Length: 477
Image 1 (cartoon, rainbow, N blue to C red):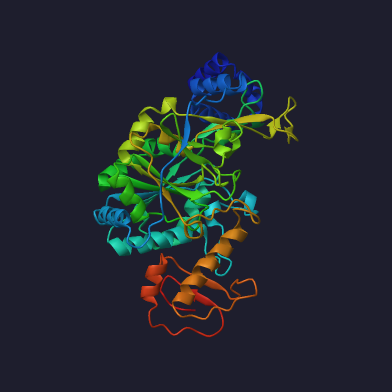
Image 2: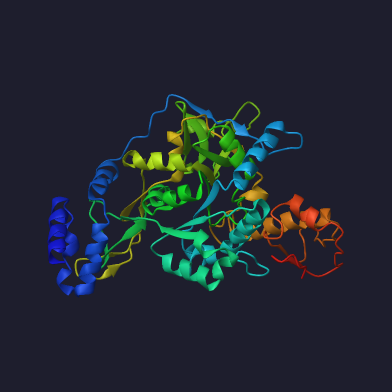
């Protein structure tokens, strides 16, 4: 152990970070071992490169010669031959056992005022069904529909790994086979101050941040997930994020288009509601697929242009829903040293010279992270981007009220389900604004979509009053 610590001291001195040992004499053996282990996981040359790029200097915006909108595949409509072919190809892939699922679930419910992993948040206002349970119910439905296992690969973070695993154990993996629910851990990056120095938030602990959802790419390979997928005969992974309860987690249309067009990585987009809506924008820059973050819109003013009728020229908002081939993930991983990184300036608690913890009033630290959509620049085909119906596929929950909130998610739930019920012949009581006045909840394990719901409820006798709750077992309560 002493040899390891001595070697780490030499490395820290080499990279100008030996200040992190200033409280070393105060630490017991366990504290010293913990700090040393934390330091061993750091890629020092990479951090130095990022400090040189983002802290010592400010990188210039990439000067694209051309920025053009992507071609968007519309939402399937009756009689759409291409959509029918895509559906057939996607369903064939499901039945052949070629599809797996990747869920990014490394976040905590802090912004929701919830003391636990975001996925364990009770997104339903009726039964308290959690985000994890909604997604698990969808998996059960798809497995029954296609007669194949859909392994669920879940990326967790350092802060929520133990709690997430316990939550799944406590709920018996929501009826899924334990061997098919596989967790892998997101890597962490050290925060640095304005001089590029590591920050201590405790005498034996560095302030760290997750390496971004782009970290799923090295995570999938280094954790053995890619090997597991190959062993199962899986070549296609459907990627989604935990906070979107409505995500169509494995859409056969989407997967079919991806496969028929030889996709490395494909995406779903939503039509932006305004030019400055805070979502990334799908576009093609100098012939290369890109997503430009909303924070960079003023750097690329072309993305804010409208046509002669006032319509947005770049309406394709990023939904964080993708399909990736296993081969593509591995190829990007093999070139990950060139993968783009992003930097943000944040407030991070730190120890001052006397060892007291300081809560800064202004941003004092730089955080580095990667974004999964940056992998699109490595695809070897024209972008495959499908449009979606936001109500039924994209209702992320970033906060309790306002845009992209628990409040709006619950509104869209009721809007979708009440429409299904009325088509099925159920009387739904509504207020003057058209909103349903009764509690409604339909488990995705019973019905994933409108068509399945109408088929399963044909001939049902509906109550004339009271709430409408249909559980996983299909029983009306």
